[in-house]
View 1 (cartoon, rainbow, N blue to C red):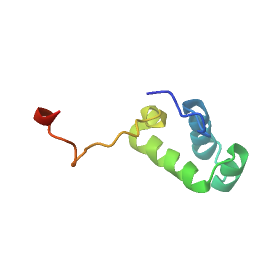
View 2: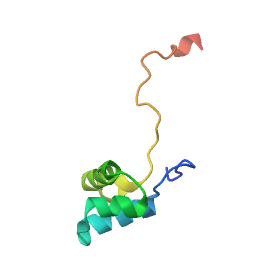
View 3: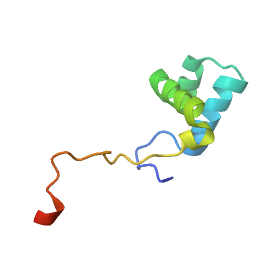
View 4: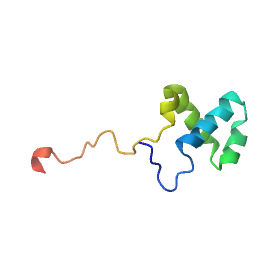
Length: 77
């Protein structure tokens, strides 16, 4: 899924730039966050996702819940 919502500050391309500046260019997290208008927490989030899944971790993910425990049983629908 590569369709960020309309208010998203980052796109997969911007996320790749964040990772590049942090890992390859050794820029400070504070400077990266300021440059892109995001929080330091967001920078750390994308770095962690990159370290865990590589480039695939920078793609947009669905916000749909993994489970719906109170969902109505299918035979009732």
